[in-house]
Length: 188
Length: 188
DNA sequence: GGTCATTGTGCAACTAGTTGCATAAAGGCG
DNA sequence: CGCCTTTATGCAACTAGTTGCACAATGACC
Image 1: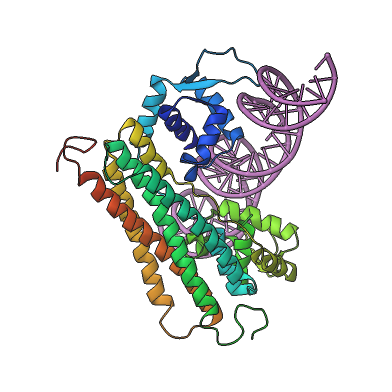
Image 2: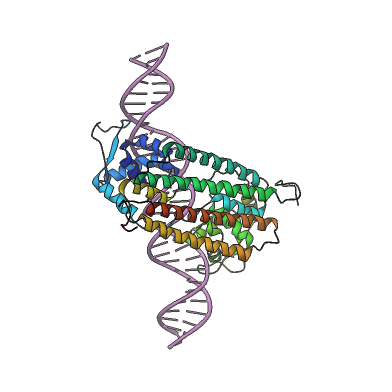
């Protein structure tokens, strides 16, 4: 049950319409809780129903008409309560690791290539995070909020660092020690 | 669509009944693709329907009666095809990072404690992985399959290492540099 | 022989996320 | 005006995972 709280957080940072939220998700909260506009609109409806947010009365409601939302006191309390809850980390669920395991059983001609492809993707994401860090978090001025937000970003950076490191090692391990051809299906 | 393939992999490693599969999932494939027995039985039904596996004819089928499955040629092909597919990494979706972000907005009295709790969990998981590595992967004898399986395990190890590292740093950063009161529990 | 715990299989309802598409207003352009 | 693109909101159907519970066989104990 995290999406509504992600939305509350985003709306507290700045009241927005559904589409604005969607755009902001794409480059901020969405890095660690992605969501589509369909999901967001649905959730906005529920949050309004529950009395956690309300539409700003600037424009009459109509389909295709922009509608801005702001968080109500009840919503803020709900969010605060959720933050203070204990919640275990979600179990890992990673298809790439699964495919490698399957490859151990049925063989894997193109696996090294796939690993390289993933490596590039993770390197790209890492570069994006580092850019954000440099832009948004200069060394000085550390308010309490900044420190938390920076830690979150650091989480992203460290995570991508882990992936690039592991993938690099895995690739080396796969086509390195093989005396013969390489990853090719020909061997054996 | 990974669960059926996880099951195919497990069944290729060793033909099993639903409950056996469930137990093996708990300590092997389930580390990176967890699943409950309900899900597994349902999927076994589908895989049999699709002609990818079949029940061994040792016992007549009856509810409450053990039923073993083995993978058919079609199932093996399906798995091989899936392994060779390109598939992007799933987007990260992490409630802890989300809660930290929310904490930046609504405050976070107990957050450092929650981080410590997570740290312990990750340390425990890491220790478990390291134990498996020591037990199942002694330095020598590296067949192709062993190398792949070991890489997967390494993935788990490196991932937990990332978490313990990041959490340790985050905890230090949260209750370390706090000069005044801030979100801290007061002490320091 | 009856009851009880254990092993084993499975259905049903629910929740969260995804995919595809419909609808409406607004503004530009010929 | 009529058409087209962009912005914006939203419904509906589907997929995957979770939760709760039911039911069947087996063996142990009294």
